[in-house]
Length: 169
Image 1 (cartoon, helix red, strand yellow):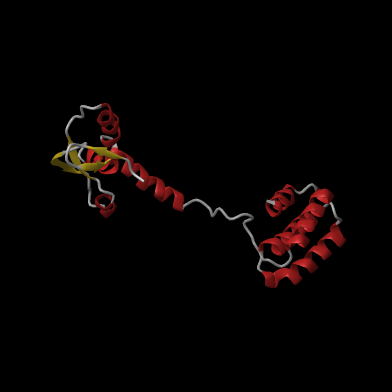
Image 2 (cartoon, rainbow, N blue to C red):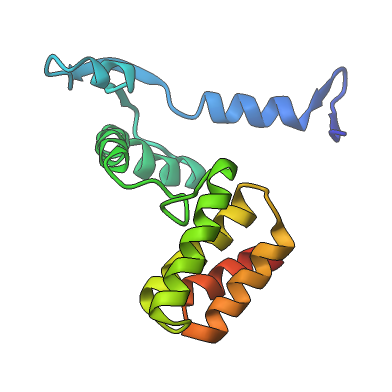
């Protein structure tokens, strides 16, 4: 798997040479000032900084630019993670009924479409919810696809069009 450099007396793998170069590229000189302000997350993120010697090779120069910004990047990652927790779930659609709700949703869709008409928003919403239950709860995927397509044709419901695409993909 690895190529070998043949010396006069020993074989050294390129892998071990590259690992040795990367790990010895930056020699810690002395610990710098800790960036911890009492928040335990900073020490867990490795924000107790280390000062590195100035690089000499081109590779080391590129790594130097990244390494000198490491504490700031780690703080940014912590802040980003905190923000992501406040975002809504990525599940679509937001309401995914259980299989046990199928009969009730079918009756509700029938009532909404009979009273308001096939092109109404109430009928489209009820039929979309019924199709969602059929597809995502595993009741009847082909029936759910038909429900999505019929609902899109009757009312132009874009959610039903997306649901149909999800089923087809």
